[in-house]
Structures are given as structure tokens and as C-alpha cells.
Image (cartoon, rainbow, N blue to C red; front, side, top):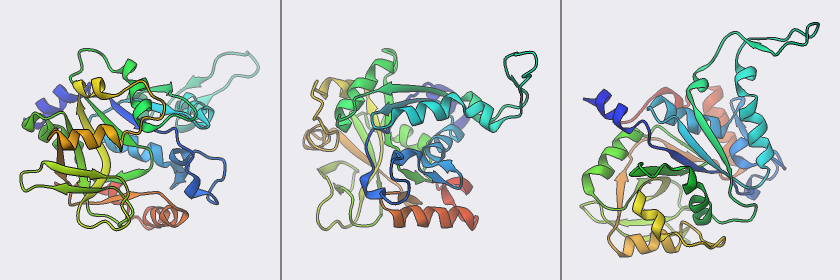
Length: 275
């Protein structure tokens, strides 16, 4: 049954917000976009995409802004960097790729969504790459890793029939706080309150296509404010509770923590999936 569900949901596109500056990571790699900062030798964005791909979600739209050239150079050269390559300089022939990697199954669209655009507008700009026949799409950020079973979130979203699902996690208190009823309905969506307690937004969303009609043509539109707050007020935002691992790379200390987990072989986002 799970395999049938996976095949049904495989076309679901994953929109990843990658356009911000990541200023709080200053000192790690000063001019590097945060999603491209390496953990264990590969960008944290790669770790995020690899987690989705292992669950069957291999079609990505990257919402680019700051230093979009870094993303394009990385993915345009990814196959040759990971595989065995022969370059015949004497004959001037095109390089021959001998060994491919699992990343060759990925489809990556790199969308220029504006240098200064806010997150809601970036999603709106990326919508042109979501086929009209797709009834659902996913949105996440380029700075958090998890052992979340993404298929279960999609299954949960289909079961409740509301417009949106947010994954709720138990984390440090500096992120957006959610008020969740016993039935899973989100009563409030508060972005980064002074003191958070209980469940907070883990930054992985599943949206029904009708959500796109709620996104105005305004570069200042923040996904985390009016669009999600209005969904919560309308009773159209549900929460999937994730009790497993989730960690956001927001500061140099966070980066050091993820590096330590990787280097000691204790990276939960690579080694397991929580049910």
C-alpha cells in the first residue's frame, strides 16, 4: 500500500526558499547563502533535498535571490563533481561521465524570485513551475534538517481536506509558535514570539493549490505573516505533529552542532526516519 501511495505522490513538487541573506550565520562563510553552507562537506540544502528524495520527492523548485550564481554553479556541475569523469584534452571531446549518483534522478528548477523579495512573494513567483494539474505542493526552507517522514505529512493533509498543513515540532524557543487544538487545527500562527512554549513551526508545509489564490503580487509579502495567519483564522491550517528530530541552522553555534553530529556519525536526518 505504501508503494502505491508513493507512486501517486511522486509528482508533488517541493518549493525550497533559498533567497535570503542568512546574516546570523556571519562568520561561518561570510558571503555564502545559508542553504549552501556545508555540513559534512555538502551544502545543507543538499541534505534537505536528499531527505526528500529518499522518500520519493525528487522534483524541486529553488526560490533564488541572494547569490543565485552559487546555486546554479553547484547544480550545473553536481554530476561531474560526484561521478567519475574522463576529459580528453588532446581530442577536445566532451567530458565522459562514467559513474552517476542518486542525484541524477533529481529535477531541479532554479527560479529567480527577486533579490529583495519576501517569502510569500517568492512562493508566488515559483508557482509558474507547479503544473496546473498538481493539486498539492510542498514548501520548506533551505536551512533545517529532520528525520520527518514526508509521505505521512502528505497523507495527513489529504485526510483533513483543509488548505494547508504545517509540521509542528518541539524546538528552541526562538521560532514561530503555534496554538494547536486537540483535533490538530491551528488557532494561531505567531512568527518568532519573545517566549515560545510547546509546539512551533518546523517550516515544512503542504498546500492545496487554492492557496496560491491567497498570495498577492507584492514583493513585501511574507508567507509567515498575513497568508498563514489568515489561514489559521479561517480554520484552514492544520498541524502535523512531529516528535522526532528537527534542527534549524540559524547561527554559527547551530552550524557547529550539525557538524558535530555529522562527524560523530550521529546525524539523525541521515540515519533514520521517525514514525
